[in-house]
Length: 314
Image (cartoon, rainbow, N blue to C red):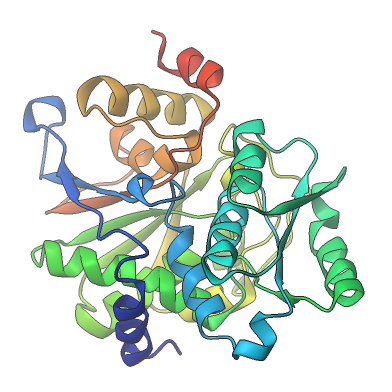
């Protein structure tokens, strides 16, 4: 559903905009078993992989549509990406965010020139986004329900497979599913024998429920310190795209996510937000049996400094 040719075009267009992020090995002395490397997406210009998908989707809009401005709903990182890309093209951007979104992410949206519209209920973000889009004649750039967004995120998967062809397992945190769907697309095209494992907060197991049911299931609640992984439902398009490649979703507790944030800070010198550490948390907590070279996607460098200090304290 996401052709490799589309992903290759996305990668070429992203040159000079996004970073080809490195794979950083976890010291063997710090983690027993097969080797683990970290795909460091927190090094992107807006601190997360989201810039890949946002740029791909917005750059592929007809110029007349793009000139109308863009709008999205986001808890933070996708919103920052859309604002960043909108400024790149010189167009207006509105980001609908929950009122309890981390201040550092709200400030990030504004720093990149985006306008923020708050909603008090997270569940109302999409509806408010659609209202404002109709009111202002703007184009909606969904966080994950969009093939161009997924094609952009897939460039991360292509990079992983090019950087470490021997990789057997790729571990990916899951919010709405755009990133893991993109990586699954890359794996399907380039190395279908590799395993892609999803990781989500124990308080928001939307992909696990979808895999059990065979279709997306809406959760009644979603709770975790990993604020970027709290959609109530996996995206319908991402769920279709990942079929046959992603077969299981592992849950991690907030305590395990905190441990991963602290480990990455102390042992690998990487400072990431809880959402960005979730995939590695599953490996650190031995929730995943590693049989060979493993890559964990690390994404999200946007964390409140005071919260981060609390997380990394023993």
